[in-house]
Image (cartoon, rainbow, N blue to C red):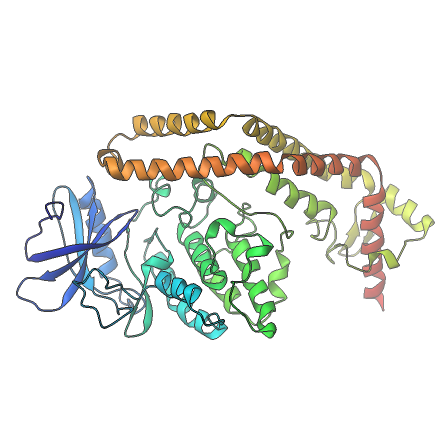
Length: 475
Protein backbone atom coordinates (compact mmCIF):
# COMPACT_ATOMS: atom_id res chain seq x y z
CA UNK A 1 0.00 0.00 0.00
CA UNK A 2 3.05 2.27 -0.32
CA UNK A 3 1.54 3.94 -3.37
CA UNK A 4 -1.10 5.60 -1.18
CA UNK A 5 -0.41 9.26 -0.39
CA UNK A 6 0.05 10.40 3.17
CA UNK A 7 -2.19 13.24 4.30
CA UNK A 8 -2.40 14.32 7.90
CA UNK A 9 -5.72 13.66 9.66
CA UNK A 10 -6.66 10.98 7.11
CA UNK A 11 -6.43 7.23 7.17
CA UNK A 12 -6.37 6.29 3.48
CA UNK A 13 -7.69 2.78 2.84
CA UNK A 14 -7.68 2.14 -0.92
CA UNK A 15 -8.10 3.76 -4.32
CA UNK A 16 -11.69 3.71 -5.56
CA UNK A 17 -11.53 5.90 -8.65
CA UNK A 18 -9.37 7.81 -11.09
CA UNK A 19 -9.99 10.51 -13.67
CA UNK A 20 -8.26 13.13 -15.77
CA UNK A 21 -7.72 15.39 -12.78
CA UNK A 22 -6.67 13.07 -10.01
CA UNK A 23 -7.34 9.95 -7.98
CA UNK A 24 -10.10 9.23 -5.49
CA UNK A 25 -9.47 7.21 -2.34
CA UNK A 26 -11.65 5.66 0.30
CA UNK A 27 -10.55 7.24 3.55
CA UNK A 28 -11.53 8.13 7.08
CA UNK A 29 -10.93 11.33 8.93
CA UNK A 30 -8.92 10.30 11.98
CA UNK A 31 -11.01 10.23 15.15
CA UNK A 32 -14.15 10.13 13.00
CA UNK A 33 -16.18 7.06 12.06
CA UNK A 34 -17.82 7.93 8.68
CA UNK A 35 -16.02 7.01 5.48
CA UNK A 36 -15.21 9.80 3.03
CA UNK A 37 -14.13 10.02 -0.59
CA UNK A 38 -10.77 11.77 -0.70
CA UNK A 39 -9.72 13.28 -4.03
CA UNK A 40 -6.06 14.03 -4.64
CA UNK A 41 -5.14 16.29 -7.57
CA UNK A 42 -1.46 16.14 -8.44
CA UNK A 43 -0.36 19.58 -9.60
CA UNK A 44 2.57 21.95 -9.51
CA UNK A 45 0.05 24.77 -9.41
CA UNK A 46 -1.91 23.61 -6.38
CA UNK A 47 -2.13 27.16 -5.04
CA UNK A 48 -4.06 28.27 -8.13
CA UNK A 49 -6.42 25.31 -7.91
CA UNK A 50 -6.87 25.87 -4.19
CA UNK A 51 -8.03 29.39 -4.98
CA UNK A 52 -10.61 28.00 -7.38
CA UNK A 53 -11.71 25.48 -4.74
CA UNK A 54 -12.14 28.27 -2.19
CA UNK A 55 -14.24 30.11 -4.74
CA UNK A 56 -16.36 26.99 -5.18
CA UNK A 57 -16.93 26.76 -1.42
CA UNK A 58 -18.29 30.31 -1.45
CA UNK A 59 -21.11 29.32 -3.83
CA UNK A 60 -24.32 29.58 -1.78
CA UNK A 61 -26.37 27.05 -3.77
CA UNK A 62 -24.47 23.74 -3.77
CA UNK A 63 -27.47 21.44 -3.40
CA UNK A 64 -26.84 19.79 -6.77
CA UNK A 65 -23.13 19.26 -6.13
CA UNK A 66 -21.29 17.00 -3.73
CA UNK A 67 -20.61 18.70 -0.44
CA UNK A 68 -16.91 19.23 0.29
CA UNK A 69 -16.11 18.45 3.93
CA UNK A 70 -12.45 19.38 4.11
CA UNK A 71 -9.63 20.49 1.82
CA UNK A 72 -5.97 21.35 1.84
CA UNK A 73 -2.82 21.54 -0.27
CA UNK A 74 0.83 20.54 -0.19
CA UNK A 75 3.63 21.61 -2.48
CA UNK A 76 2.72 18.90 -4.98
CA UNK A 77 -1.01 18.29 -4.74
CA UNK A 78 -4.40 19.57 -3.75
CA UNK A 79 -6.88 17.39 -1.89
CA UNK A 80 -10.44 17.56 -0.69
CA UNK A 81 -12.86 15.13 0.91
CA UNK A 82 -16.59 14.63 0.49
CA UNK A 83 -19.27 12.29 1.76
CA UNK A 84 -19.35 8.76 0.40
CA UNK A 85 -22.06 8.09 -2.18
CA UNK A 86 -24.92 5.62 -1.86
CA UNK A 87 -23.77 2.04 -2.55
CA UNK A 88 -25.00 -0.07 -5.44
CA UNK A 89 -25.24 -3.00 -3.02
CA UNK A 90 -25.55 -2.04 0.65
CA UNK A 91 -24.56 -5.55 1.77
CA UNK A 92 -20.87 -4.77 1.09
CA UNK A 93 -18.75 -2.65 3.40
CA UNK A 94 -16.88 0.23 1.66
CA UNK A 95 -13.61 -1.50 2.59
CA UNK A 96 -14.69 -4.58 0.62
CA UNK A 97 -13.32 -4.45 -2.93
CA UNK A 98 -16.78 -5.49 -4.19
CA UNK A 99 -18.28 -2.26 -2.89
CA UNK A 100 -19.25 0.17 -5.64
CA UNK A 101 -20.72 3.66 -5.45
CA UNK A 102 -24.10 4.29 -7.00
CA UNK A 103 -22.99 6.25 -10.04
CA UNK A 104 -24.82 6.91 -13.28
CA UNK A 105 -22.24 4.75 -15.07
CA UNK A 106 -23.01 1.81 -12.80
CA UNK A 107 -26.76 2.32 -13.27
CA UNK A 108 -26.38 2.33 -17.07
CA UNK A 109 -24.26 -0.82 -17.00
CA UNK A 110 -26.72 -2.56 -14.69
CA UNK A 111 -29.58 -1.70 -17.03
CA UNK A 112 -27.68 -3.11 -19.99
CA UNK A 113 -26.85 -6.32 -18.11
CA UNK A 114 -30.30 -6.75 -16.59
CA UNK A 115 -32.66 -9.45 -17.97
CA UNK A 116 -35.39 -6.82 -17.74
CA UNK A 117 -36.23 -5.53 -21.22
CA UNK A 118 -37.04 -1.98 -20.15
CA UNK A 119 -34.85 1.14 -20.18
CA UNK A 120 -34.93 4.30 -18.06
CA UNK A 121 -38.21 6.14 -18.48
CA UNK A 122 -38.27 9.73 -19.75
CA UNK A 123 -39.20 10.87 -16.25
CA UNK A 124 -36.27 9.05 -14.68
CA UNK A 125 -33.87 10.48 -17.25
CA UNK A 126 -35.02 14.06 -16.68
CA UNK A 127 -34.93 13.57 -12.91
CA UNK A 128 -31.29 12.49 -13.16
CA UNK A 129 -30.17 15.18 -15.60
CA UNK A 130 -31.97 18.19 -14.11
CA UNK A 131 -29.69 18.62 -11.06
CA UNK A 132 -26.62 17.94 -13.22
CA UNK A 133 -27.56 20.71 -15.64
CA UNK A 134 -28.24 23.00 -12.67
CA UNK A 135 -24.88 22.17 -11.09
CA UNK A 136 -22.98 23.01 -14.29
CA UNK A 137 -25.00 26.22 -14.66
CA UNK A 138 -24.19 27.23 -11.08
CA UNK A 139 -20.48 26.60 -11.61
CA UNK A 140 -20.50 28.69 -14.77
CA UNK A 141 -22.32 31.55 -13.09
CA UNK A 142 -19.51 31.62 -10.54
CA UNK A 143 -16.70 31.61 -13.10
CA UNK A 144 -15.80 27.92 -12.70
CA UNK A 145 -15.78 24.84 -14.91
CA UNK A 146 -16.13 21.21 -13.89
CA UNK A 147 -14.21 19.88 -16.95
CA UNK A 148 -14.92 16.19 -16.48
CA UNK A 149 -18.69 15.69 -16.61
CA UNK A 150 -19.36 12.02 -17.32
CA UNK A 151 -21.56 9.21 -15.96
CA UNK A 152 -18.84 8.10 -13.51
CA UNK A 153 -18.89 11.55 -11.92
CA UNK A 154 -22.64 11.63 -11.33
CA UNK A 155 -23.19 10.05 -7.93
CA UNK A 156 -26.31 9.50 -5.86
CA UNK A 157 -26.75 10.67 -2.29
CA UNK A 158 -29.94 9.63 -0.52
CA UNK A 159 -31.26 8.79 -3.97
CA UNK A 160 -30.56 12.18 -5.58
CA UNK A 161 -28.11 12.63 -8.45
CA UNK A 162 -25.28 15.09 -7.77
CA UNK A 163 -22.25 16.24 -9.71
CA UNK A 164 -18.98 15.15 -8.13
CA UNK A 165 -15.22 14.82 -8.70
CA UNK A 166 -14.32 18.37 -9.62
CA UNK A 167 -11.33 19.39 -11.70
CA UNK A 168 -11.98 23.01 -10.81
CA UNK A 169 -10.11 25.86 -12.37
CA UNK A 170 -11.04 29.43 -13.20
CA UNK A 171 -9.26 30.04 -16.49
CA UNK A 172 -9.44 27.85 -19.57
CA UNK A 173 -6.16 27.02 -21.30
CA UNK A 174 -5.41 25.09 -24.47
CA UNK A 175 -3.53 22.37 -22.62
CA UNK A 176 -6.15 21.90 -19.96
CA UNK A 177 -8.79 21.56 -22.64
CA UNK A 178 -7.07 18.37 -23.72
CA UNK A 179 -7.16 16.83 -20.26
CA UNK A 180 -10.05 14.86 -18.85
CA UNK A 181 -11.71 11.61 -19.79
CA UNK A 182 -11.51 10.37 -23.41
CA UNK A 183 -14.88 10.35 -25.22
CA UNK A 184 -16.40 12.82 -22.74
CA UNK A 185 -13.73 15.50 -22.93
CA UNK A 186 -14.44 18.56 -25.07
CA UNK A 187 -12.08 18.51 -28.08
CA UNK A 188 -9.62 21.39 -28.43
CA UNK A 189 -11.24 22.58 -31.68
CA UNK A 190 -14.61 22.80 -29.87
CA UNK A 191 -13.20 24.88 -27.03
CA UNK A 192 -11.11 27.08 -29.32
CA UNK A 193 -14.29 27.96 -31.23
CA UNK A 194 -16.03 29.20 -28.13
CA UNK A 195 -17.50 25.91 -26.94
CA UNK A 196 -18.16 25.38 -23.24
CA UNK A 197 -16.33 22.20 -22.07
CA UNK A 198 -19.14 21.47 -19.65
CA UNK A 199 -21.77 21.73 -22.41
CA UNK A 200 -19.87 19.04 -24.30
CA UNK A 201 -19.63 16.83 -21.20
CA UNK A 202 -23.35 17.27 -20.51
CA UNK A 203 -24.22 16.35 -24.09
CA UNK A 204 -21.99 13.26 -24.13
CA UNK A 205 -23.31 12.12 -20.74
CA UNK A 206 -26.93 12.69 -21.74
CA UNK A 207 -26.33 10.70 -24.92
CA UNK A 208 -24.92 7.76 -22.93
CA UNK A 209 -27.97 7.85 -20.65
CA UNK A 210 -30.63 7.87 -23.36
CA UNK A 211 -28.92 5.41 -25.69
CA UNK A 212 -26.78 3.15 -23.52
CA UNK A 213 -23.93 3.74 -25.97
CA UNK A 214 -20.55 5.46 -25.75
CA UNK A 215 -20.25 9.00 -27.18
CA UNK A 216 -18.12 7.81 -30.10
CA UNK A 217 -21.36 6.56 -31.71
CA UNK A 218 -23.08 9.90 -31.30
CA UNK A 219 -24.92 11.01 -34.43
CA UNK A 220 -25.32 7.55 -35.97
CA UNK A 221 -29.00 6.59 -36.41
CA UNK A 222 -28.36 2.93 -35.55
CA UNK A 223 -27.33 3.98 -32.03
CA UNK A 224 -30.16 6.35 -31.17
CA UNK A 225 -32.01 3.87 -29.00
CA UNK A 226 -30.68 1.42 -26.41
CA UNK A 227 -30.86 -2.32 -26.88
CA UNK A 228 -33.69 -2.30 -24.35
CA UNK A 229 -37.29 -1.35 -25.09
CA UNK A 230 -38.64 2.19 -25.19
CA UNK A 231 -42.34 2.94 -25.37
CA UNK A 232 -43.38 3.67 -28.94
CA UNK A 233 -44.99 6.95 -27.92
CA UNK A 234 -41.67 8.13 -26.43
CA UNK A 235 -39.54 7.66 -29.54
CA UNK A 236 -40.25 11.14 -30.86
CA UNK A 237 -39.01 12.53 -27.55
CA UNK A 238 -35.80 10.49 -27.93
CA UNK A 239 -35.26 11.89 -31.44
CA UNK A 240 -35.85 15.39 -30.09
CA UNK A 241 -33.20 14.76 -27.44
CA UNK A 242 -30.72 13.57 -30.06
CA UNK A 243 -31.26 16.74 -32.06
CA UNK A 244 -30.62 18.80 -28.93
CA UNK A 245 -27.38 16.89 -28.30
CA UNK A 246 -26.15 17.35 -31.87
CA UNK A 247 -26.80 21.05 -31.66
CA UNK A 248 -24.89 21.34 -28.37
CA UNK A 249 -21.78 19.69 -29.88
CA UNK A 250 -22.09 21.23 -33.33
CA UNK A 251 -18.95 22.05 -35.24
CA UNK A 252 -20.43 25.46 -36.01
CA UNK A 253 -20.37 27.78 -33.00
CA UNK A 254 -23.33 29.63 -34.45
CA UNK A 255 -25.51 26.51 -34.25
CA UNK A 256 -24.79 25.76 -30.59
CA UNK A 257 -26.87 26.88 -27.65
CA UNK A 258 -25.71 30.23 -26.32
CA UNK A 259 -25.94 29.15 -22.67
CA UNK A 260 -26.28 25.98 -20.63
CA UNK A 261 -29.69 27.28 -19.57
CA UNK A 262 -30.75 27.27 -23.24
CA UNK A 263 -29.48 23.72 -23.62
CA UNK A 264 -31.44 22.54 -20.57
CA UNK A 265 -34.58 24.38 -21.68
CA UNK A 266 -34.43 22.67 -25.08
CA UNK A 267 -33.94 19.21 -23.52
CA UNK A 268 -36.90 19.68 -21.16
CA UNK A 269 -39.16 21.20 -23.81
CA UNK A 270 -42.31 19.32 -24.79
CA UNK A 271 -42.24 21.01 -28.19
CA UNK A 272 -40.39 18.32 -30.09
CA UNK A 273 -40.68 20.24 -33.36
CA UNK A 274 -38.58 23.10 -31.96
CA UNK A 275 -35.35 21.07 -32.19
CA UNK A 276 -35.85 20.48 -35.92
CA UNK A 277 -34.49 23.97 -36.58
CA UNK A 278 -31.14 22.22 -36.32
CA UNK A 279 -31.41 18.77 -37.86
CA UNK A 280 -28.21 17.33 -39.39
CA UNK A 281 -28.68 14.64 -42.04
CA UNK A 282 -29.12 11.13 -40.70
CA UNK A 283 -26.64 8.38 -41.40
CA UNK A 284 -23.41 10.28 -40.85
CA UNK A 285 -21.20 9.93 -37.85
CA UNK A 286 -20.78 13.08 -35.82
CA UNK A 287 -17.41 12.86 -34.13
CA UNK A 288 -14.68 15.12 -32.88
CA UNK A 289 -11.22 14.59 -31.43
CA UNK A 290 -7.80 16.07 -31.04
CA UNK A 291 -6.30 19.01 -32.84
CA UNK A 292 -3.75 17.46 -35.20
CA UNK A 293 -6.04 15.16 -37.16
CA UNK A 294 -9.50 16.65 -36.63
CA UNK A 295 -9.61 18.87 -39.77
CA UNK A 296 -9.20 15.92 -42.11
CA UNK A 297 -11.30 13.49 -40.10
CA UNK A 298 -14.24 15.90 -39.92
CA UNK A 299 -14.12 16.73 -43.61
CA UNK A 300 -16.51 14.03 -44.77
CA UNK A 301 -19.10 14.87 -42.15
CA UNK A 302 -18.76 18.60 -42.74
CA UNK A 303 -19.12 18.06 -46.48
CA UNK A 304 -22.39 16.19 -46.03
CA UNK A 305 -23.71 18.87 -43.67
CA UNK A 306 -22.86 21.65 -46.09
CA UNK A 307 -24.32 19.85 -49.08
CA UNK A 308 -27.54 19.10 -47.22
CA UNK A 309 -27.77 22.66 -45.96
CA UNK A 310 -27.52 24.25 -49.37
CA UNK A 311 -29.19 21.66 -51.56
CA UNK A 312 -31.31 19.47 -49.32
CA UNK A 313 -33.72 19.55 -46.43
CA UNK A 314 -31.98 22.24 -44.37
CA UNK A 315 -32.76 25.70 -45.62
CA UNK A 316 -29.89 28.00 -46.52
CA UNK A 317 -29.86 30.98 -44.22
CA UNK A 318 -30.65 34.27 -45.87
CA UNK A 319 -32.33 32.80 -48.95
CA UNK A 320 -35.87 33.34 -47.78
CA UNK A 321 -37.50 34.68 -44.67
CA UNK A 322 -40.11 31.95 -44.99
CA UNK A 323 -37.51 29.20 -44.75
CA UNK A 324 -37.00 28.13 -48.35
CA UNK A 325 -36.59 24.46 -47.45
CA UNK A 326 -37.46 21.66 -49.79
CA UNK A 327 -40.50 19.92 -48.37
CA UNK A 328 -41.57 16.36 -49.11
CA UNK A 329 -44.24 17.55 -51.56
CA UNK A 330 -42.03 19.95 -53.53
CA UNK A 331 -42.41 17.84 -56.67
CA UNK A 332 -46.15 18.56 -56.72
CA UNK A 333 -45.58 22.22 -57.59
CA UNK A 334 -43.64 23.52 -60.58
CA UNK A 335 -43.31 27.25 -61.03
CA UNK A 336 -44.53 28.57 -64.44
CA UNK A 337 -41.70 29.22 -66.89
CA UNK A 338 -42.43 32.92 -67.32
CA UNK A 339 -42.32 33.54 -63.56
CA UNK A 340 -39.27 31.31 -63.10
CA UNK A 341 -37.27 33.05 -65.85
CA UNK A 342 -37.99 36.47 -64.38
CA UNK A 343 -36.94 35.37 -60.87
CA UNK A 344 -33.87 33.61 -62.29
CA UNK A 345 -32.78 36.87 -63.90
CA UNK A 346 -33.87 39.52 -61.39
CA UNK A 347 -34.75 37.72 -58.17
CA UNK A 348 -38.01 38.23 -56.33
CA UNK A 349 -38.75 40.79 -53.61
CA UNK A 350 -42.01 41.35 -51.77
CA UNK A 351 -41.54 43.19 -48.50
CA UNK A 352 -39.42 40.99 -46.25
CA UNK A 353 -39.89 37.97 -48.55
CA UNK A 354 -37.27 37.52 -51.25
CA UNK A 355 -35.66 34.93 -53.53
CA UNK A 356 -32.13 35.33 -54.90
CA UNK A 357 -31.47 35.43 -58.62
CA UNK A 358 -29.44 32.48 -59.84
CA UNK A 359 -26.09 34.31 -59.98
CA UNK A 360 -26.45 35.57 -56.39
CA UNK A 361 -27.53 32.08 -55.34
CA UNK A 362 -24.46 30.47 -56.92
CA UNK A 363 -22.11 33.16 -55.62
CA UNK A 364 -23.25 32.45 -52.08
CA UNK A 365 -22.14 28.84 -52.51
CA UNK A 366 -18.70 29.33 -54.00
CA UNK A 367 -17.14 29.66 -50.54
CA UNK A 368 -18.84 26.40 -49.55
CA UNK A 369 -17.39 24.71 -52.63
CA UNK A 370 -13.92 25.87 -51.62
CA UNK A 371 -14.41 24.40 -48.13
CA UNK A 372 -15.59 21.09 -49.59
CA UNK A 373 -12.55 20.92 -51.85
CA UNK A 374 -10.17 21.78 -49.02
CA UNK A 375 -11.73 19.23 -46.68
CA UNK A 376 -11.61 16.52 -49.32
CA UNK A 377 -7.92 17.23 -49.89
CA UNK A 378 -7.26 16.91 -46.13
CA UNK A 379 -9.24 13.67 -45.90
CA UNK A 380 -7.43 12.27 -48.91
CA UNK A 381 -4.03 13.13 -47.41
CA UNK A 382 -4.95 11.45 -44.12
CA UNK A 383 -6.38 8.36 -45.85
CA UNK A 384 -3.16 7.88 -47.83
CA UNK A 385 -1.03 7.69 -44.68
CA UNK A 386 0.06 4.36 -43.27
CA UNK A 387 -0.83 3.22 -39.78
CA UNK A 388 2.77 3.76 -38.70
CA UNK A 389 2.70 7.33 -40.03
CA UNK A 390 -0.45 8.11 -38.06
CA UNK A 391 1.11 6.83 -34.83
CA UNK A 392 4.29 8.79 -35.59
CA UNK A 393 2.18 11.92 -36.10
CA UNK A 394 0.68 11.46 -32.64
CA UNK A 395 4.12 11.09 -31.05
CA UNK A 396 5.47 14.15 -32.85
CA UNK A 397 2.53 16.23 -31.67
CA UNK A 398 2.92 15.05 -28.07
CA UNK A 399 6.62 15.92 -28.22
CA UNK A 400 5.82 19.44 -29.44
CA UNK A 401 3.31 19.89 -26.69
CA UNK A 402 5.79 18.67 -24.07
CA UNK A 403 8.43 21.09 -25.34
CA UNK A 404 6.01 24.02 -25.20
CA UNK A 405 4.64 23.18 -21.73
CA UNK A 406 7.16 20.89 -20.01
CA UNK A 407 5.87 21.55 -16.49
CA UNK A 408 2.47 19.90 -16.92
CA UNK A 409 2.09 17.17 -14.26
CA UNK A 410 1.10 14.56 -16.84
CA UNK A 411 4.69 14.44 -18.14
CA UNK A 412 6.01 13.50 -14.72
CA UNK A 413 3.70 10.52 -14.32
CA UNK A 414 4.79 7.77 -16.72
CA UNK A 415 1.72 5.58 -16.21
CA UNK A 416 -0.66 8.48 -16.70
CA UNK A 417 1.22 9.74 -19.76
CA UNK A 418 1.20 6.31 -21.40
CA UNK A 419 -2.54 6.03 -20.84
CA UNK A 420 -3.02 9.49 -22.33
CA UNK A 421 -0.83 8.62 -25.33
CA UNK A 422 -2.76 5.39 -25.87
CA UNK A 423 -6.05 7.29 -26.01
CA UNK A 424 -4.54 9.80 -28.46
CA UNK A 425 -3.32 7.00 -30.72
CA UNK A 426 -6.68 5.24 -30.54
CA UNK A 427 -8.56 8.40 -31.56
CA UNK A 428 -6.08 9.20 -34.34
CA UNK A 429 -6.41 5.71 -35.83
CA UNK A 430 -10.17 5.92 -35.48
CA UNK A 431 -10.23 9.16 -37.50
CA UNK A 432 -7.76 7.69 -40.02
CA UNK A 433 -10.11 4.75 -40.59
CA UNK A 434 -13.09 7.07 -40.97
CA UNK A 435 -11.21 9.14 -43.53
CA UNK A 436 -10.38 6.02 -45.53
CA UNK A 437 -13.90 4.57 -45.30
CA UNK A 438 -15.64 7.85 -46.11
CA UNK A 439 -13.40 9.18 -48.88
CA UNK A 440 -15.56 7.85 -51.73
CA UNK A 441 -18.72 9.33 -50.20
CA UNK A 442 -16.99 12.64 -49.67
CA UNK A 443 -15.83 12.75 -53.29
CA UNK A 444 -19.35 11.91 -54.43
CA UNK A 445 -20.72 14.78 -52.35
CA UNK A 446 -18.17 17.17 -53.79
CA UNK A 447 -18.97 16.09 -57.35
CA UNK A 448 -22.71 16.45 -56.74
CA UNK A 449 -22.18 19.93 -55.35
CA UNK A 450 -20.11 20.96 -58.36
CA UNK A 451 -22.69 19.48 -60.75
CA UNK A 452 -25.49 21.34 -58.99
CA UNK A 453 -23.71 24.65 -59.56
CA UNK A 454 -23.24 23.87 -63.27
CA UNK A 455 -26.97 23.62 -63.96
CA UNK A 456 -30.12 25.19 -62.58
CA UNK A 457 -32.09 22.10 -61.49
CA UNK A 458 -31.40 22.61 -57.78
CA UNK A 459 -32.02 26.34 -58.12
CA UNK A 460 -35.35 25.71 -59.85
CA UNK A 461 -36.43 23.41 -57.02
CA UNK A 462 -35.49 26.07 -54.51
CA UNK A 463 -37.41 28.77 -56.41
CA UNK A 464 -40.47 26.55 -56.98
CA UNK A 465 -40.83 25.56 -53.36
CA UNK A 466 -40.09 29.02 -51.98
CA UNK A 467 -42.47 30.74 -54.40
CA UNK A 468 -45.13 28.17 -53.48
CA UNK A 469 -44.74 29.14 -49.82
CA UNK A 470 -45.07 32.79 -50.80
CA UNK A 471 -48.36 32.08 -52.62
CA UNK A 472 -49.66 30.08 -49.65
CA UNK A 473 -48.91 33.04 -47.42
CA UNK A 474 -51.14 35.26 -49.52
CA UNK A 475 -54.19 33.05 -48.92
